[in-house]
Amino acid sequence: MSSISGHHNHASPYSSGIERKREDLYAADPAARLDAARALPPRVAAKLSRTVKGWPDNSPGAVNAWLLLVTTKPPTWRDALVPWRELPLAVGRLHEGFLYPDPIGFWAEVRRWAVETLRGFERSWDVSEALAVSALIHVGNDVKALGVAMRTCRPATVLFLDEAAWHSAGWPVDPRPFEIPDPHRPDQNYEGFWARRPDGVFVGKSPQHPTMHRFYDAGDMSAYLRALHRFA
Image (cartoon, rainbow, N blue to C red):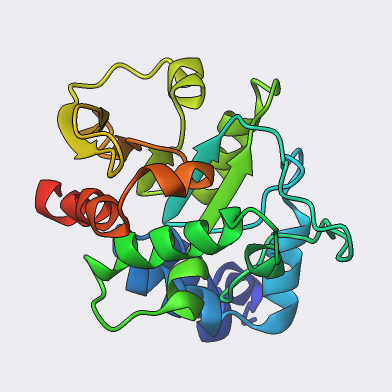
C-alpha cells in the first residue's frame, strides 16, 4: 500500500520562495532588502507589518529598514493644520510619516539625509527608494524602543542623531571621528563618527541634529553621511 504522508513534509515552491524572500528582507545590501519587500504578496506584507509590537510613537519607517535613525528629542515639529497619523510600518515603500509637512524642516532634512546615506551604496536612488529601507525612531524616555527597532528591522546601519540617544544605547565601539564646521562661527566644529559593532552593524553619531540645519552646511553634512560608504 502506498503512502502519501511524506508529501506533507515538503514545502511548495511558492512557500519556499516566500521564505527566501523573508531572508532577503534583512540582507546586508539595501537593494536586496527593497526588492524582497516589494516582491512579497500583499497579504504576507500586511501580516508582517501587523506582527510588530511595541513600536514607538512618532516613528515612521519600513519594517525591514536598512538605515535606522535614532533621536531622543520630543516631536516639536507638529503642523497646526495637519494632524500626525500613527500608521503601521511600511513594507516595500516609503512610510507616509516621512512626508509630514512640519514647520521647522525636520522631516525635509531627514529625507535628504536618508537619500545621501543610501546613495553611497545605490547611486540612482531617490527619496522613494531610500525611505523605503529607512526608519526613524523617537526613543524619548522609552529605553526599550531601540531594542524593539533593532529586533524588528535588523538594520545594517544605525545613525544616532544626538548625543543623548547615542549614550543611552551604551554600545562599545571604536569610533572614527568626523568633524564638520559651523558656517557662522569659524572656530566652532561639531564632531560625529562612524564605527562598526562586533556583529557587523555600522554605527554613526551625527555631528548635528536635523533640527539644527541652520548650524551646518548641507554639503558638509552630506560629506559626513557619504563617508559611511568609504568606511564600509
